[in-house]
Image (cartoon, rainbow, N blue to C red; front, side):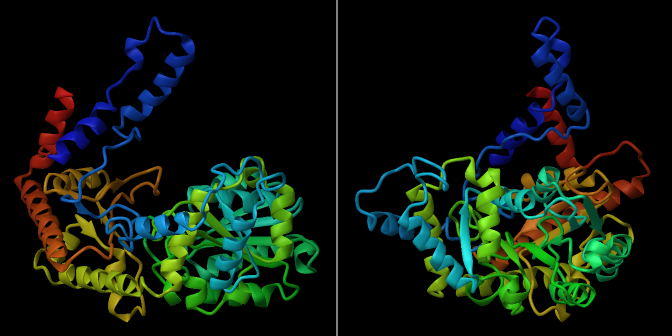
Length: 463
């Protein structure tokens, strides 16, 4: 069974190694000792074996199922074959030899699809976000970001020379307004347009699955900074291919293309390709070329990489993925309805064993993201993870420091290939876990753990 191989690898990585390295070079011993601190919490991040298609997939970034069905591979092979005899490597950075015609052609196509002035293809969405934050805010400027922003934002902020770096409460219009007002009132440069503010948000938040109130945010910024010196950087990693016309993203769904200075799209998720794309105007592009070392201090994207991106975008542009977009919306609604209809749901909620924030008012939302977190009691996400794994389902537990303390959850990711039958199995499996946890709770034992956790623990001892 897949879960046995996976749990053995994960649990085996949690065994303390420092005590057995007394005679090893101090360099390596120090590294192992630092990791032992994490191992003591059974939280060391590690690689995991790839699972077969027979395992219920509630984890991968293959949202539109283009990888699983082979459609992206077939489109990529056709696109690559059309290039004839090409040079495999770009053989230089974009500021040297690597700025070749095919790359520029695909960037123009992507920009046109997204109704942007220009596009820049980066090696990943993470590097794209870091590059923008490294290059665009100038000395004296400010970066304002949602407190639940992706790690690429925090990494980029560390690279930035901006003088002010301030977060605001997640998805809170009032909190954003307060932070912006404090900057404006403290420094006349912001009030009179002499200094810039870059507001960083995400269309869909990867751990919470909720959607940015972008229209409201834009209104606040326009009202407070009429000079136009406050602009947005939006990470559309999880809306690419999933939301908007032909999967063009949240910004285009809302018709805000002209209001957002910089958009970052990711090609390695729904598109099934690789790399990331920065959408911006020519001024921002020039600033990136001049100042973003994370973009220009490495070799340019290769022809196969660019071909994979073009293949993914051709599927979007042709409308061939709209059926899959609709399937995601349908399956998420079915999951939420089925979960709420289950008789154990209310009791699990009342006892604090399970919470699904996105279930509240779900019927009133015009569209849904593909990410639905199942919140648990602190630490119980690992119990539920093991329970699902032993039921041949893969949905990872997410804990601190990836998410704030006390907000551990199972992160469910839905795909076009998920079926109603699979959702029925998922809901019943979660319900069985809740029932078991309620029984353990009523037993009064402070040391009782669920069956799946006992099995996993025994596997860890034998690994």
